[in-house]
Image (cartoon, rainbow, N blue to C red; front, side):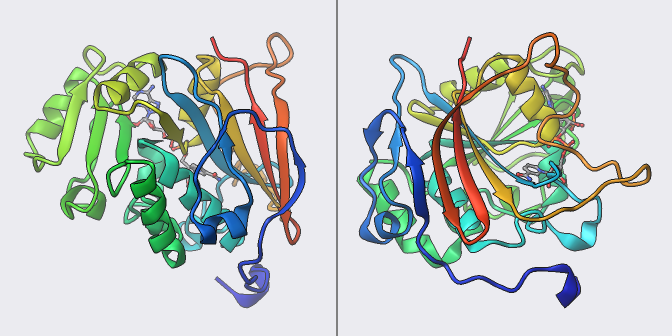
Length: 289
Ligand SMILES: NC(=O)c1ccc[n+]([C@@H]2O[C@H](COP(=O)([O-])OP(=O)(O)OC[C@H]3O[C@@H](n4cnc5c(N)ncnc54)[C@H](OP(=O)(O)O)[C@@H]3O)[C@@H](O)[C@H]2O)c1
């Protein structure tokens, strides 16, 4: 990374609320998080967990650069507010779900609150304790192939409970690698087939996620989630960057592998808009099926 390719580091300033029409009940945020974010309300549907997504995109709709040297934060410009919000959403979640492509792109990451925003580790821990949740959310990985490296920290460290939702073939492949006891593997599709989004959510619920399931992508799995009508709400950060694409670097958008418009576009409702510097933090509510 060159100094000219990145914006200057920004201090962690409080989010400025521009619009807030969010429904739901107030989450009891510790002082440090309340002062940073303001009130956080989240709906609690009867009889099922609330399903929320979190993504960051550039102004021109890019969610990932195809350059391994840039790492996962290049889209937001390593923005600390975006990271603090990611940590906050992980802190209120029972489970954080990512598909295998996202794991492979950020292979040494732990999908925990402090894993993305370590400065706020104490506040996140206090929040989870106040909510009566275990110290870490369940980290869930979705793979049809089962081709995951179980020596990666998220699997081998024992610092976070893990659920892998996969096909029957994928489960057999993973069983051959003898996962540790804190890594559970569920076969939720026959043969080598992909798991339906409903199948993923059911496995996560069966593992104990009763209130909130956070989906962090990536773009191919997110497309399936939208197609299944399974997302209640998207927290979408808009980073003030033009990243560009060309024939050699097609670069994914928020949704890959699914078509909605013009036959069946999804039109969510804006419920919240915050800013920190030139970054915008949106919340969009979707109709679920
Ligand atoms: N900007 C952001 O907010 C953001 C957020 C998340 C990710 N990203 C970026 O997105 C990129 C990864 O994108 P990606 O296209 O690889 O997408 P992805 O959705 O993360 O991963 C696709 C893979 O996930 C597995 N998968 C997806 N749907 C499945 C299903 N229904 N059943 C079973 N397995 C399923 C498959 O793995 P197998 O091949 O193992 O079967 C598939 O190859 C990374 O660069 C990441 O950094 C950006």
